[in-house]
Amino acid sequence: MKLFNLYKYAMLGLIVGSVTLSSCKKDDNPNDLPEVDPSDYVGTIDGFKSTEEIYPTNLVAYFSFDENYADKISGNAPTLAAGNTLVTGIKGKAANLNAGYLYYGTQFNAFKTDVFKSFTVSQ
Image (cartoon, rainbow, N blue to C red):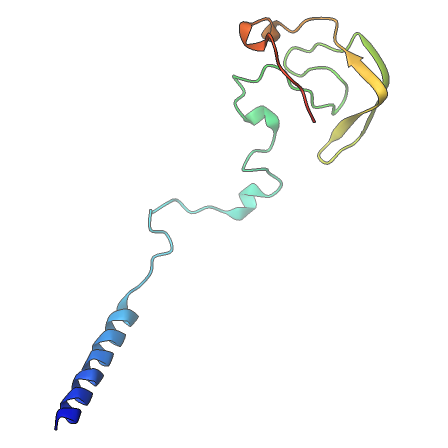
């Protein structure tokens, strides 16, 4: 008789547990965020289509090298250059310096601040 009661309670617990677990519905959007279409982000890096979209008010110089060597913010072009060519890059064009340089004789106004007394440009 004890075995029958134990079996009865075990079956009842199994039925209640399976009904409880199967009735739960997991929401795929728990924070109720707006729907996103993945096709909107094709060809972008972290949602940005261009470097000019990332903190444009803080951008002091932007060298895209797409058409020429001029800075897109100030329009300053190099006053001296040697050993340089524009080549196809990963995205757009790139500057290829073969023992060369680009010298900008005109100082950028944005660089005439205390913040830029010392800075490094690296690849």
